[in-house]
Each structure stands twice: as structure tokens, then as C-alpha cells.
Image (spheres, rainbow, N blue to C red):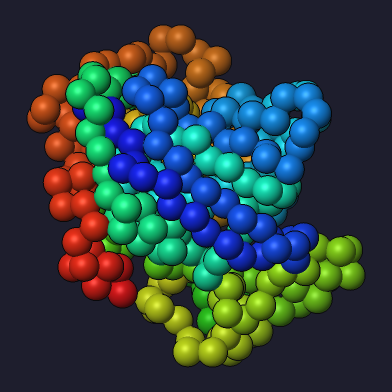
Length: 311
């Protein structure tokens, strides 16, 4: 069944690219509401942005929503992944600026906040999107694919010349809290040379060694090193989780990404929904709900053991 959070939970931090101090509050919302962001700093015009694939506009470094009426919001992927991973289907999210705060560069702070206030089941049926046949998009050596499956599975490969990253691959069935255990604490990453280049362009102004994994060749420059030896590919899977949540409902599919990023995953959703015979709506049975990423999380709510499990 559908779920929302029990009460409002608030976060504060800087935007990764703007460097501006930003506040974000996740509020409960009624069944059927979906995930909607609201730019509370905008007093004129339409300030709501539905978290949907068709509201995404191309952006090379993050996922950017644009409602077509003057409101945009960037870097939504980590909070979207946290909502999907905890099985939250309905929420109103207030943000007082154009960018979601980066916090520690992962989804872990959002997940902990959600679990702290608890999850409320809403007694209304949940619908999911079942992929019926493979859909794929490619750009050079990079590709992203959705194929039929009875649950969400993410399979990702990355290749970087930096020895600190190199070739990494990982595959996960996202049921039974796998997102919380395996991916939620993995941070965004970049190369020192890319940071220098971005700052010359007025980007990454809020980035620090504390909210991103920064590498330089074989060196990991961030204090404390890596949280996982394959943290980079885990974070790419986290991003994919958040970007796939923009389908508007849980996906029953195998997602495969090879050198894919935010823009390619959005292109994949656009390709899927452009082909009506490639997908269908299904009403979730209890058995099907138990195979979704947030299964079982609501039963525990704000239990300290969850936070311990997150690392």
C-alpha cells in the first residue's frame, strides 16, 4: 500500500554547486499525491515541481527539475533515492532555494531523518510500473537499459583512468532494504582536476572533502578515505535509484548502466514511456509489495538499529 512519513523532518546544508545555505523540509502528503517539491523562496508564479521524468531538463552534473513556469530545482537525486529506498510514495518537500542541500554527499542523512520520524502506511493500493520488453539508449560506449523483472534490480559498471576508482561493477536486487544496507551511505565522487575546472566555471562552490569523495590518481584526498572499496560504483547505483524514482511509481525492471549518468537514465525513462507496449501499470499484491525496495522498512519506523545498519 501507499506510504508517507509520519511527521515533518527538516534538513539544512549547502548546495553542492551554488554553495548557498539551503533548508529542506519533507512533509507528509495524502495518498495519490506523489512526490512534489515546492520552492518556498518563490512568491510569484507556480512554485511546485512534480518529481517526474517529464519535468527533467538536461544538466550534465545533476538531475534538474523545471516546471516550465519559471521554477527549477537541482540535485534532487539523493533525496529521491532516499524516498524510494524507504518506500515513501507521497510527500511535499519544501526547499528555500534552487538546489537541494548536498549534506554529506550521500542519501544517508535523508534516510536517517525519514526513519527518525517514522513511516505511515496509508491504506490505499499501490501501483507499480512493470517493464514488458527491453528498452535501451546508447551514447558511444555508454548505455542504459531496462529489461523485464519481477522486482527492481540495478546492475552498474564504471571505468575511470584514476587508480583510486578504476573499473568497478556491482549488481543488487533492491528488495528487502538493500538500498539502506548497501548504497545509502555512498558519497558522490569526483577528480581533483574536475573540481578545479568546475570552480573556474562557478560550479561546485559548495563542494568540500567532507561532502564528496575527491580523488587524484591513486590518492583519495577526502579525510577518512572510502566508506566502501567500491564506493564510486555504489554511488552511481544510488544516483540511478533516485533518477528511476522519477518514473512516478516503483519500477519492476532490471536496470543496467554502463558509464551511464543522470541524463542517460532520464533518456531511458523517456524512451520507455514513448513506447506504450513496453510497460504496463500493475496494482501491487502483498507478495509484490514485499519485493519493492521499501518493503519492511515501515514496520520498524524510527528504530535505532536501522541507523546502526546504515554505518
